[in-house]
Length: 362
Image (cartoon, rainbow, N blue to C red):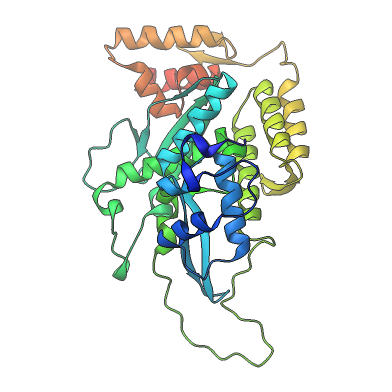
């Protein structure tokens, strides 16, 4: 997506769609924003391209370059970042242009035991948060674990907003993951500040060890060839594969294939069930798998000694609601969501009958 930024940035700072380098005025403002001489020409060119593609304004701090010291390269490495608000701006802009709809399901938080809550009232941080973005009727669920994103300082102490609002920060990371799944092309290559806060965590203490001349550095960490841009494409492709794995709708997989094709991601390698595949190959196979006709004969489960077909979704939901009414359960949809991990409309009839069996036995 290429957006003309002149509507949001005026005068000498206006970024033109055909611009290939930063102007002297733009470069001067970027230096004042904290981008020093350690930045490379490739990083600046990539930042310009990303600003044009996302339509975010670097001179209004909607998107910015953050430099962090890299021990392997022995210099600052600059990475584009935005806020979760920047992600939301892009998402709303894209759906408005395409005539699509955009919505969210209720955010959920999980405690250490695996129990989900629709509001987090505990004093300790949640173990994880789940956000589901709904783009044009298609669900994109994502879960972020607190320990994978929390920002820590000296002595491993939680700092910043992570210490004050851990539930909110974890939910923002989950939302960023879900939005990147829903908009893989538009959000590829840029990460939110909430996600990247942990990048500033102190590194584990290293102890000297004997290394013979010519031996490889035991502390070196290999990076994918191509740097941050390649890592961004690889992550975007993996996000698409993860969504395809979770969906049971063949049409949704077809839409994912179109999105991945438009973003040039079909040749990227993804991991599915511990197997490395090209994204295009996997999406075609997944689409064919979901498009297979369902067998006419299905198994059955027993609910109070009555044989019921497991594929009768409406009957399963009706039976569950009838049981809830008899037992004076106020909100069976909420309780079922916590037990099954998804709304009743999105789970199989078999799972609903199983839940009803458990409730009846209890």
